[in-house]
Amino acid sequence: MREKKNGLNNRPIGIFDSGIGGLTVLKEIRRMLPNEDLIYFGDTARVPYGTKSPLAVKKFASEISVWFKSLNVKAIVVACNTVSAIALKEVEKFSKVPVIGVIKPGAIESAGAAVSGNISVIGTTAMVNSKAYEKELKRINPSFKVFQKACPLFVPLVEEGWSDKKIADEIIYEYLFELKEKKRGVLILGCTHYPMLKKKISSFLSGYKIIDSAESVAKFLKEDLYAKGILSRKKKGKEIFVVSDAPDKFKYLARKLLGLNIKSVRLKRF
Ligand code: DGL
Image 1 (tube, rainbow, N blue to C red):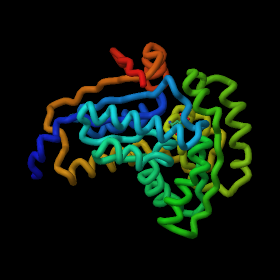
Image 2 (cartoon, rainbow, N blue to C red; image 1 turned 90 degrees about the vertical axis):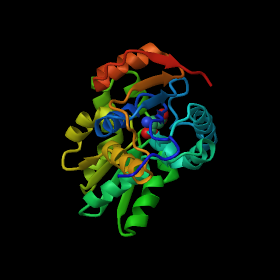
Image 3 (tube, rainbow, N blue to C red; image 1 turned 30 degrees about the vertical axis):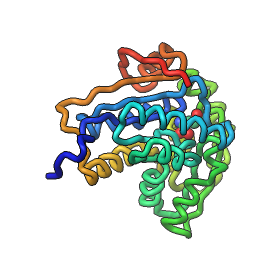
Image 4 (cartoon, protein in one colour; image 1 turned 45 degrees about the vertical axis):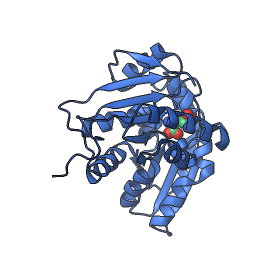
């Protein structure tokens, strides 16, 4: 059994996203690591990230990392594909703690499931432009055929709480119709907001194996903390939720879309 290392064990893990999307990752982390203290930050004042320039996303990620550092986190999970694709280095540089992004675990899981070699990736415009999944997948197997499609309206749709409305079907049709024509294979939900549209996407694109990286990210994190000897020794972990704007809306959406009953949400402005 590994022993205590510099008293890091019981420090919290920082998790962040532009909004509520990263809660899909937090849920898996909580399931797999019930003893850890978690601090979740949703940058609701600046959501969406995926339509912004890489420079802007890097600035947001740096600010959040410096703040997490001041909270003494022992690790950071970047529960946002856009930041993971564009600004992982900034997070590492400014936080100086282990950083887990969502792209690598998602790519590894998808590569394992891609029997036919056909992999489609949907995500924000910034994430798709970065080609982060394509690069990661081709590193694993250069013969993979990767198709990417940006779906910029999906994030505002989810943040508006409209993922179950009829308009969601129309937007899904517009973006994903061409995928119906393609050879079926794996479809990566390359944005942490998209699992909230998963039911509708999978019924529209039946025949695809749909992957979101939340579970593999949680597994990656657990293995990393174990390897570093810094798993928590607490009996039960706590959660703190912080947003940069509209805490009541965040609380409402977390309950409506993810069934999370969050008691209080704090405010942090940058
Ligand atoms: N959940 C973020 C992601 O995974 C959403 C990005 C956005 O805010 O546009 O990319």
